Length: 433
Image (tube, rainbow, N blue to C red; front, side):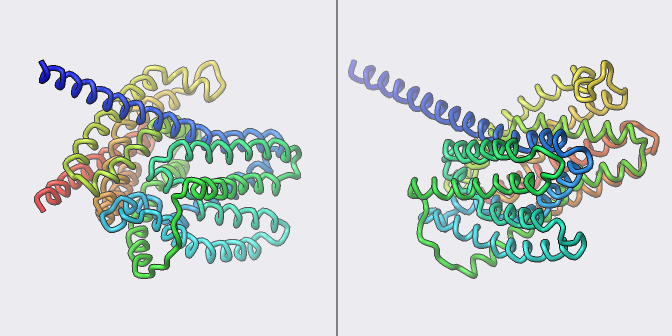
């Protein structure tokens, strides 16, 4: 009887533990979803407010400077956030993970400060002194971006703090934007509202971390900084190769194809990006959990990675089917017409088919390979995808409507298959070692 009672209590305890873990994971995903919604809300409001109040010409100026700033920030980030999340849970840093926030921030500042100086000087030389306020706003944005600590809070699974910082910085940014950008002469004010977001996010983030006592004393470690730059350099090169498929691909298509097809491809790509944004909370939390497990238990990491892959595939297939089924309605809503152009409907359906392959490729390549310290493999896979994409885009018949979609699907499948196989061999090798 006692054995039965003990067994029953043990079963109840395991169920409560499982339910508690599930509840914790659910709340963290919800917090990340809210944070991600806040992050995506600001650029959307920025576009609407500037387009309406600045006018088409001045809005184009803001769009140029914000796009340029975002591109430069890709170099400032240098892949260091990804490396930092991995290193927080590595065996050598596990005892003092707080040191990573100082190492990564210092590394980004080493890149950021000279980059800001060069950028401002080049803009003064090429665009004159009339846009001085805009140039300084860009510099403040980049410095705030370098201090941004959300990657560290995510690595410690402080998701509510991530949510709080994102909501405060973005919603105050929206309030500032709406209150100051009211006429076509407010371009500089729009850029300062843009800079406010990263500066506020960094300040609030560091205050929250101080309150939570997750900051240690800074310590300079020059040999380790060199290691970070080597690993980050490979990651940023892979990121640039991957991002070129969208921006440069549309530019090439604009030269080769009809403007209607070019616009339809750009619109379909934006719809795919919006759909994939739904996976970001799960993606981010999954990467944090994998980072922890890889440094502790490789078998558990592989088991969790498989479950994460199956969950992402199931969700991505559902999204792909829904977008494909309602492609005509979605395209019509975006264009604001009763019936969308045939090119848009066809490309939206084809872009929907690429979603599962793109999600798998991101998990295996952008996350999995750097996590297992295979940054060079990540670069090679990314460069290979760019070669396949542009090769298919240029070699297929120029009048074919689906060229862009087939080229992107081929590149996504390459990343998913090759990165997946390489990651599998890496895991087997590490398991035997």
